[in-house]
Amino acid sequence: MAVVLILVLIVVGSVLFHVLSPWWWTPIASNWTYIDTTLVITFWITGIVFVAVVSFMAYCVFRFRHKPGNRAHYEPENRRLELLLGGGTAVGVAAMLAPGLIVWNQFITVPADAASVEVVSQQWLWSFRLPGADGKLGRAETGDVTPENPLGLDKNDASGLDDVIIEGGELHLPIGKPVHILLRSVDVLHDFYVPEFRAKMDMIPGMITYFWFTPTRIGTFDILCAELCGVGHGQMRGTVVVEADADYQTWLGQQQTFTQLTASSGELPPPN
Image (tube, rainbow, N blue to C red; front, side, top):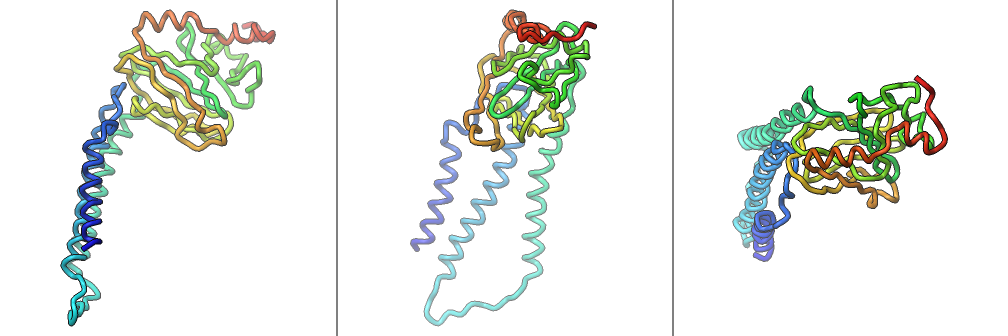
């Protein structure tokens, strides 16, 4: 009976924990309500299975507890039960995977009017690059990274000379405008994660990964690294500030371009 009681308490406690927890959902700050819908579907499917399995275990412990003279019925296989369990598991897994595949397609299908923003990771720092007046990001290579050129921009690419460079500062974004996030790592595997955006993606050295979202809520949000990247992993944090367009333009005008950055370091880019 003690085992039965423990199993029942596990079921009741788990359900109450998830239902009553005030931090169950963080306030969403982007257009990805699809992510929440997928999480809710997954939660209900796994929650129902968890309650059913543990409750069945409690029933079996109580119903088939040891009694003098009782012997277990020998049944090495049950084709009907196997088909039922196998089919039910397949349906449950498919129900969890299908919404995720739909959301993933939306997650990587970038709108044509999305503004590009590059996020560059390194141990243990976030840096950002925004297009300048020409609206285009210049070429960049990890092999070109130097103390004077921290993001490795190609100095012979005119498109990159007016790129806005933000090293270790805040990333500001205007509210209500889609953003194409380009992700690049210059050393090891990292993961760009803003919980309130419902957005995260691995940053793999030698590759450019990406996703997109539209900020829908003004505020300041933490950037976390969601991939163990060394001893400073826990301190690898940044900030995204979502603000009105006028405030964003004011902030953008105060940032250094690549040309200004190289000039201040005494290393001028070649003339056009």
